[in-house]
Image 1: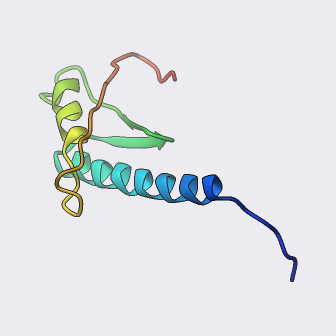
Image 2: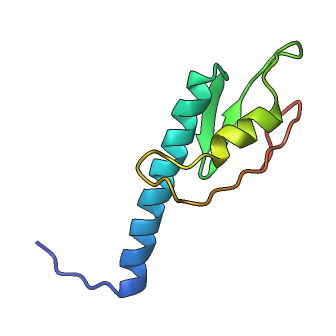
Length: 89
């Protein structure tokens, strides 16, 4: 066993990242339920792949990702999407 030290900021950062992951997970599941073809995620981004004739669009996905999760109904969320032929950060 090795002793180590920490500080408040590190603990708060871990808690915030944990909640952010749970919010992203709720959005991923909601996008999947709306029949988006989710192919991945990177940090705070969801990556979907849709055909050109799909009725699913970026505004719908932004709306889905902006909905608060059921366990935090008053959480204020926003989402900004991007469309392109390839993924970029």
